[in-house]
View 1 (cartoon, one colour):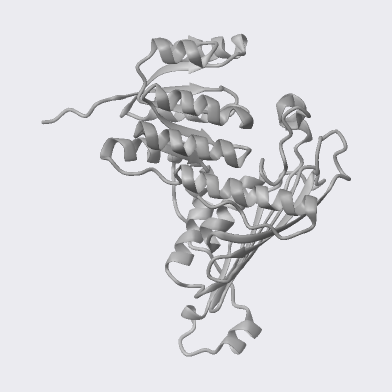
View 2 (view 1 turned 45 degrees about the vertical axis):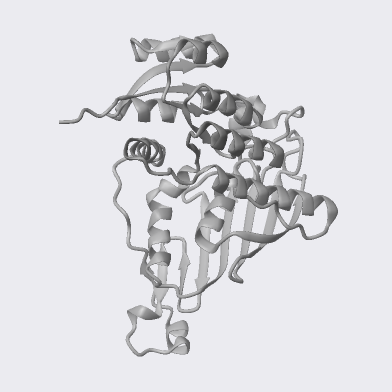
Length: 345
């Protein structure tokens, strides 16, 4: 019997990185070898919980000391590219939290480094691994909606408490645009459901969250490949907060629609015409997908499984870069008042 190599993994950044630490620790194909965080107290807490794991205050020292097969980059957004490229050049495959980067130039550097080192680069767009959105994608893939012509996602959040506890999110030195920060979840799902972005229009305002350094409410309207229209709204100071579901989804196709957990399709009514079904609006529930693991754990399991079996993990660096480009097009359009064609990857 051929023995499967156990992959040595590390996590850089132990805030959001806690999800990846737990995922690696629970995966039998992985040995959690090292953790890296500049916060000594937080690092010490993790090392106490995971005895035998090596701790480091900086990634330079960690990468020089450890022979790593895969590294999770879970740091503030503007650090992803430099830290990820460093790990790729040290021989590790890399999964980066979203957004992949904050600029087109960094996205291209990141992708080029993965290609030059023959290492895999994945973006942890974990909503693609969440059963709620997997169920919607299955409905689309089965053709129950027909040809999709409209995709809308609204992410109405209140981030004040989170951003007060973790101030880099509202750093004036490295501003985090709402549509590219939290909104990258929704933009990525819109692309996954509706297709690549060909052109974008944007608008924003800065009325509800004055302590945030930029627009705290942003909207993007997108022309998608294949002709569909997409729309994403992101707020950082909605009073409704983060009730469930925090991300509102509406998808319309030529023979069906999804509104959150509700589904309607002509396929459910033999011989019925569109007018009759539309008048009756006989909604059903979107057939659920059962999944024991969290979306973060499922992301890690997919990454590891692809590496073990020689497959390309998805979404890869180029997919992550396309989402970044779509978000940046909204930001540029909001500034100029003109439509913007996003950079292509």
